[in-house]
Image (tube, rainbow, N blue to C red; front, side, top):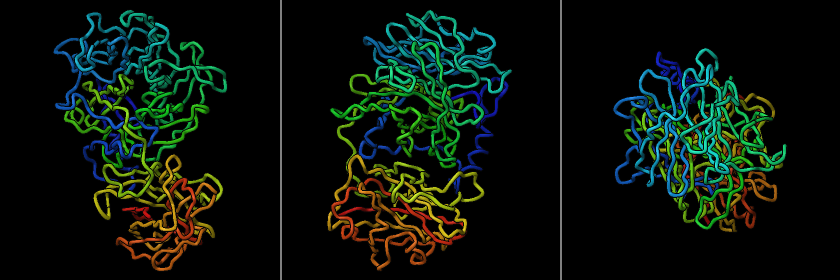
Length: 557
């Protein structure tokens, strides 16, 4: 977490006051849940996509507790948090951010042989705020890497006389105690994340500029932006290129944490050569106040091209030390390492203490889609509020705008805990039709391309739908197949003889109650390979807002 971001106000000692953040969340979340404490992530080994790391378990599992807490006195007696950690030759080396109450934030060193019990260095703080004016207000959130015997630390210097006040600073060491004088490498930005392997070693990648080390940085604040920088020597960074995170509008604020490539998630499984980025922010909070951690996948051949993103948090604040502290309901991480077949995530808890969560390599890959009720352990959508504009019969969008009054940027299709057919969660959809001859929006839900389900003559698709206005009945699930066809155009019909096409469902559903829809899709789609499942709104000459819910999807045969 930062002392300043789009959602924060600064208190006299440089700590965040989250009043503005609550206002932003309330104003920006469509039909938001009441502000409340966050819940633990619902991701399990059964519903994580193959590319994602997890699920995470807090350690020590028997009695969750921070691995480093503030000292009783001195420079780190107020808060310790957001560490960078590497593992070499049986030792865990941690650089951590800390302050002693009223003093500028500085960086200390702690070591451990078991990853849980850490001993502070007698030389602390090892990275002081000694480069004016960039670090006059402190140095924050170290990222730590090792390459060819040299340690590289990236910290965020703060100069409160500037706006934005942040500068990314870089310093090197051969012993983790004595560091070179930090130099500025990116002004007015923060959150640097060099792409590494699972052992915190920076990776040379083939880029448009040749073999380069790659660094992402930035956050949701439009004043700072998000960029990718490139380097041949890990010291000089150039070709800063903007990129888009493609998050729904109600995910703000968020920040980049760390990035890793050439990694595994499944025991004996393939190595993923794409780039996995961890991010932290309000993300899937949907109006609740918390800062959680999630994951996004980018292309290794084009680092600015996003491929996938989780639609639920990988780790959300749930334990007492995460719910209460300097910043309540907060987790934030700067480090991920694969150690003896298990991923180690050290993270800041409530901007006050440091904790550990681990994730062993999973036993198997994700299974083919058979359905979901959006509940714990069940399949979650692979996209949130994302239009399917892949070409062909993927649908796309025409003359549909965001539901008005909530600061949205487009139609919605993502999970909510407001109304459900069973359980506590369903998929909410919404938008605003412009009244044109062609009014439609097809939203991506599930990516089934990696493990496509079998579709034969007996396959049936069913779901429950709760429309809240006449326009809201012009909605149906759709499927896009590998041959370029789409279910809505194959002539499938529901149990009442209505074509399973959003436009042909108009007026055939009862408002403000759950309607059951089922179709023998095998009669028209047997033998086809399912690429993805979409949700379509389609109402020629439709005008006005629409909103409703989908739940308990089943694909069986």
